[in-house]
Length: 353
Figure 1: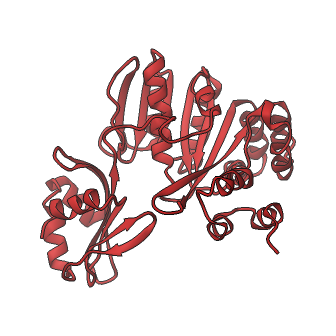
Figure 2 (figure 1 turned 90 degrees about the horizontal axis):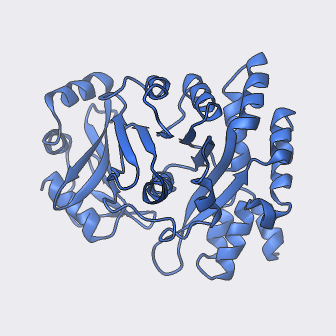
């Protein structure tokens, strides 16, 4: 048994992830559900021996010092993967691998709302793609950048930990940077990217106040900035950004956000009836009304505003996206309610007693 053989199983079964943990057989995630492979259970020394074969001496040292390690790796005959190594309580190494498609999907292939193509035509602004881990944020971002690559002559800088999708230069020019290897931090990479003549900047994750502040400033100063957050709804995303600051700083960040924010895409992946998964999108577009609510700290009113004049604004609530997919019989009622951020609204809308 070796890592390459296990990763081939991810491909062969159409899985998204591979988990290797001591005391269990290897497990893969298919359509959101973990499935154990029909193999023997692994112990700590076996896992460590397998996992270390992929690491450089520096990576081994980093893992042993930091107790976790993120990296990406590509096997020409298998595929590209994002990997995370970590220690469990017995001092044993464990690993999680996620497949990264080498062929970058288009927005049409992902069945994204038409408003997504309008977003990438912007010259500046902050576009946030949010959702829980495993909700397809990286894939959506890759498709958005791919659309720019196909249609615009832009310099696109990506700052990720690690770099996931590797874009080939078509009309646009890409500079991919790994946090840790190519720049010390997201905040550092983002700050210096402003001196590298970018048109578009992708920040893998807004992890801290400094990175958030710099991303907003970059959007204000004429750049199109894409970033992710681990939030479950558009309104929660705006709240999270504001709450990252304290006291008088919140007033300043609300004022900056009210003008620099362009859109929030919040998504979830639900089990598809039959096989596969369906992306559910919630879309917030920062128009004059939304901007005013952010500036005046009336964030609780944003959701109601999202429901108005949607044919003109392009906004979509998660409930509406759920209903559309229920009517198309792509998802079940139970799944919709389970994953909903507004379950009572959804129940009332579909008439469940």
